[in-house]
Length: 438
Image (cartoon, rainbow, N blue to C red; front, side, top):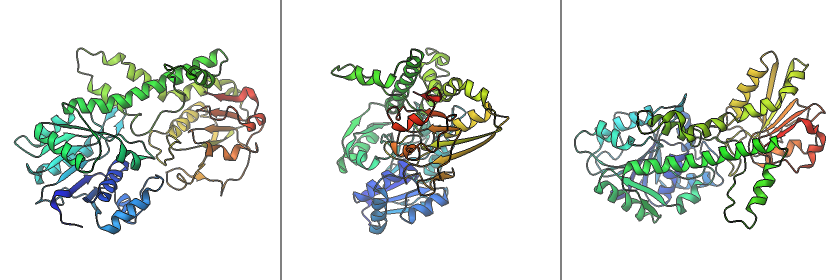
């Protein structure tokens, strides 16, 4: 590793956000040390293979490992690298939501460690998704007297395309004081990426949350519109298409599952933070109702299939779920926030007297062997008839095993969460009364 102390960077947490940032900065000549608790993840990274899929990313990872600009190490709460030198520290650890409540134990553990080994010459930038006021609260807790400069600079890339977006998208920057803000701006300006300055860390934290929640709400509205259209035997996808033709205010979204590590949790982070705000009715928030619409989408499919479930005479039900990740475009192998588990749990509840066998198909190599589910690909897929076939994400590669119609019988129930198969020829093999699609 090079010894230019002005380019020392520590990144705590080498998940998708941390590792893509680490490799990006290392490729720009920075001395980057990534810190990770998960030994399996650490070993995979050091072998030159990311634990996630993004087209071409492993090559970038291998290059910075070979150059010596990037090193991945195991987390040690009793020491930090570059201890004696000025450095920029990004905290990108996961902040999961469990039972609609934020769990920030990882964040607290890292900041507790950093509080023992940082000085006024260091800059700490939180990049994990947090509640409004978190940056300031954590600083006051762990550095009650003067400590390092600290700010909030959230991640805002799309999974599957982080490399390009890190080069192109403006970085949001905020600081707890002018020194912190100035240092954060200087850091990103040196790597020649555009920046947008927020006046407070709270403003920056809200910006991150608002942008994700706005998308979640708009998708919930699309899903609700699609369900309403069904009540009138109308094609919502056609409504979306026609409404946008030569009409500048046509902004309707297409329906589909809404998950992932951000959209599935940010509404709950903000709504929990608002519980003690006397001027906000936290029990009747639009953002909460929208999130529930998206989370309960599976219930609409079950309700529409009530007759089929009631008439199911066999004690066994065989299901094929096509597409496992929370989205299909850009391709990713991230199953966090995917509907796969929700589907399984809902069907288990509905069919608690039946023996359920679920198989999962990966339409592209990005997923095969990379998730906790036992998956099939076209290499090991054996065509046979299923009782229920489900399209769970919007990558058309997931439709491959369906094209010749061999997976369908005249009693097969077909769910398409995305409406991506409306014009496909294989639908002729399915009883039209058993096709349920948004």
